[in-house]
Length: 266
Image (cartoon, rainbow, N blue to C red; front, top):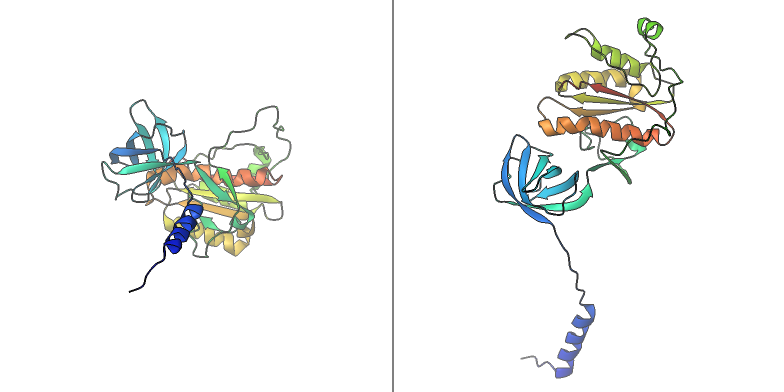
């Protein structure tokens, strides 16, 4: 039987005391009252911020939107099928944000800025809030530079400038998407970064558009954000914000950007 000397025990205790590091971590938590249709009602989360990311017990991420006196309304960024009434939720302390970088050019991503084109992860070191405040009127420059769509009928009759919003209205199958995609194709060599946001479309339609961009060499300056018809409504809701955040990243680096939302009726 091994005998342990008293000084050995005291040395071990002394080492443990020296290595002891006390960390106090305060976690803001709550419990699920009800969940359904991509929305969860949470009791608790007293210190949660508007737009803050929250994490459910089974791993689903949500965004706190409705801050009411008795509960918090959270939009689920996923199907949330495993979330149960009474399960715990914790606040992350982060406002909803996505990674941004030049590496996103030529890629197809979802509303969470995760690649869905099967070409591996996208490296990025910067993040941008999905709902960042817009610059004030004084700091904006008036529209002074034209943006050509490449369609003579439109370019000759309708003045479209960089920095301007334009609505494309038409019945089904009248070529609204064709006008938008032709505009992106026409930006080749114009130093314009294009972001095509597909909301609630069929996956086959999105794949067809991406194939067209690849064949014409337009993916070199284009990012495709896609949330198809089978995606949860909450992710379709987030897709335009993701597209805008990516475009703003390039805009604040003094690059011209063009965003196509196809379409916002979804």
